[in-house]
Image (cartoon, rainbow, N blue to C red; front, side, top):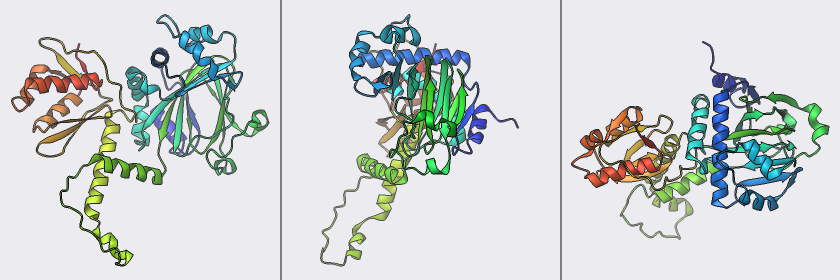
Length: 402
C-alpha cells in the first residue's frame, strides 16, 4: 500500500531519529492561507503591545530590541501581505523575525496548523508536552544564533512557505549528537558547511529535525517558514509536572485525617503512613486529564483564546462540532462532570445524557438547539443549556452551523 506523504516523512526519519525532507507537503492554496493567518497573528501580537515576550528581531544578524517601537507604530493592515508589511518596517535592511507561540494569538491559525499536522500525530503519536508553533521570516541569511540544536525532547517540523527557497543544513553524526543540549553553539558556519547534509526547501516542503541534531538554515532572500515544536519531555521533568498537577487537581476528596507519626521509629516505617493506592490513583487521574486536554485541542499545549462579545442567535439555531477539536467528558461524581474543550476544563452538573450528546457533536453533524434541549431538559434548565453552548462557542470548540 502506498504511503501518504506524512507516513513517508515518518518512515524516512526512521521514526523521528534522523533528519528528513518531504516535498510539496502543503498545497499552494494552504500556503497562501497560512501566510494570511500569520499576518493576523502579527496584528494580534502587536495590538497586545507586549513585544518583549516571544519575539526576536535581528538586523544584519544582530539582536535589536530597539526595533520594537517601529513594529508598534507599523501594525499590518488588511491589504498588506507579509512581504509588503516587512518592506514598510525594515526597508532594504537584512532582517529576521523569530516569533514563538503563534497559537496564543489566533484561534484560526491554531485550527489550521492543527489540521495540517494531524496526520503526523496520527503516525508519530501525541507528544506528552503537546505541540507549539513559531515562525521565521526575513532575508537574514544564516540563522542568527548559529549552528545549534533545540531543547531536549523538542523535535521540530519546519514548513517552508516561500516565496524564496531556503537551504537547510544538518550535522547528524555521533560526535555532534553527543554534545549536551545548550552547551555549545557553532558560529564558524562557513567552515563547518562541508561537513553538513544540505536540503533545499521550496514553498510547501517540510523538513523534520530531531532534537539531538545540530542544524542551521540559510535564507538570503525574503521567505517565511513556520515550525511545529513536537515536545516529548525528559521523564524526570514529566513526572515532576504530573505530581504538581495531581496536587492541584484535588481529584479525590478524602476527609480522613492523617494520624501523627512517631518520628523516633525507624525510617523504613514512616512510609507506612502513605496511602499508596490513593497516590497512584491521583497521578493516574491527572495523567488522563492531561491527555484529554491535549486531545481536545488537537495536541496543542496552550489553550484556545476566549472569544469576546459573541451572543447566541435568537430563536432557532444549530451547532456543529470541529473534527480537529473533539470534546470529552469525565463524570467526576453523581453531581459533577468535567468537559474538556480546546484544552479548557468546564465543570458542569452531571447528566446521564451528556456523553451521548457530546458523541453526537463530535461526529461533525449539525445538531439543532431543540435536539440539545431534548437531551438535557429538564435536569438542566434553559439558562444552563444556553450557558453551556455559549461557553463552547466562546472557546471556539464548536461553531454555529450556517
